[in-house]
Length: 267
Image (cartoon, rainbow, N blue to C red):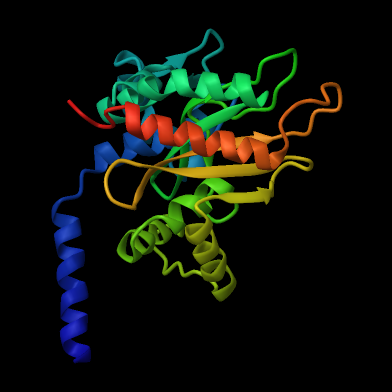
């Protein structure tokens, strides 16, 4: 049995080597390195981050600049352009979903006096695809394109709670970058409660004073395709604003309206 397993691992390694594309890997490594920086960086800094020599990435960096994915500044530093963002927003199903739901998100924000955002699962985390600020002169919200965790956010909890066992396993494996991610007994119990009550309402694990109120959005069946979330803040200057419970009711009503009136993922 051990010999068979060893042979299988060797075969998998051979297949992986056979289909390697070193140049593509190098280009993707550069893009990922730049995505993690808020300011421009030099060629030498990029190479150091990737554990390579500057001359190893020169040609690939030049191609990324010529194709418009990377910008070279006047001081010979490099930063990402908006081209990847533009390509991501051309992704048809989620673009339609964001566009179709925005009127409902705006109505919720007006009635609840709170911001809200729509998120979907993407590569081991949750990504915001639509967002509306609260009316008035101050608001707390998540920027479109922001990524959030699965296990430490209301959105992530709801997505896990309303996913099948196989989907949960897949998401946890991606979240843990290929390692065997597993839910704790406490988290399993929490997800069961979320599935039973149909929502999550929890203090934010990132920002003090914020409550995450999250409700699943379904296309077909009982598996979530998205989560509508309100980062609830208690107003002190407007005493008649809805409570957390009232905001939850508004959020659930908004999701019901979206699912009944919006042709999700339709052609």
